[in-house]
Image (cartoon, rainbow, N blue to C red):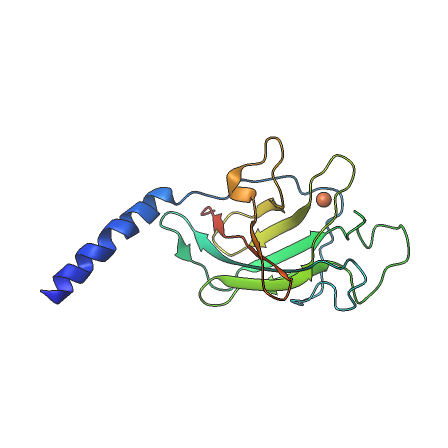
Length: 179
Ligand code: FE
């Protein structure tokens, strides 16, 4: 009796979840991608890139049923609070705040990194670039946005809150399409 009751409770949400499972929309790579990002979960150890601390967490899943994907490589890169990228031949870079990283998702597809809130630059709302790779799935290049803007899909908007310490906490889940 109990087992049957539990199954009934769980089955409906699972079916709804499977129906909602869609590949994450793609977005432009942009001109500032570098392939050799440091393997770190801290994009700005020195804090020189900005004062608004941000932690981004999320889960990477795969179609067709949004199963969690282990060992996904998540590459992220972003502008500092002034809208400037590192390693693009401009001002001298702070090696302890490159605002670039490559992190590996755990067995449950979870990833996490700490950084600072990106700034705007001409023509662009605040965003962080993503390049997600996993064997058996198509490469996903996209962007995570902070704040709405024209033509930005809801699926690319950060779910954002500020914790008691004043740190921005963002959630961004991604779903890959089989290759
Ligand atoms: Fe950009």
